[in-house]
Image (cartoon, rainbow, N blue to C red):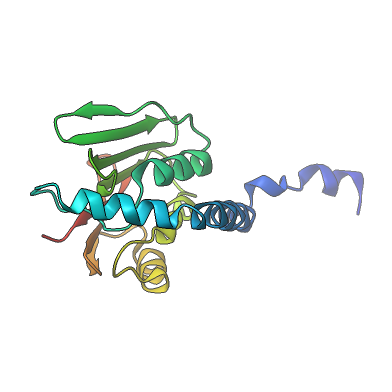
Amino acid sequence: MSEEQISKKKPIYTKWWFWLIIIVIILAALGNGFSSNTTQNETSNLTNENVTSNISTLSGTIAKDYFNILCEVAGMHSNEPQIIDNEIIYESTNQDYNIKIVADKTSDEIENIKITTFKENDYENFFLAISRLEYSGSNRSTLFNWINDNLGKESNTSIGNANFSLYLTDTNNPILDVSVND
């Protein structure tokens, strides 16, 4: 290869598959770390079920952990959450994305996720990271395929007890919204 061809070659971190590999490695490492906390989380969830609440959540999710994963994937700082009434709000923004997760204050289970991208393109890998979300009734491959098939379009689907919506803002910025079926 000539010196001119080498200088024109894009860095590896601009390749979509590079980020997919990074996401899989991070999630696998985090998944192994969380398995030891399963019994503690199940005990916490049983205790929290005794609290009367009209809030629907994605059972089995931990908003703080998922927020930190999304922030790391997006290369943004994970800000401290705000507590408002019975909810915890995790939110962070950089030049490419805005992530907002609303969770139940008692259990920290996810009620809503909204991801807005300010990028013209190359947001697919970030949206596909949402397919790693595990909750009661989740199906990773179905969600991955639905996101992959509908990027750049407006579409809705339900998987388990979650509703997923892809839509565009007035300025054509893609948004992925996840909410709980009531």
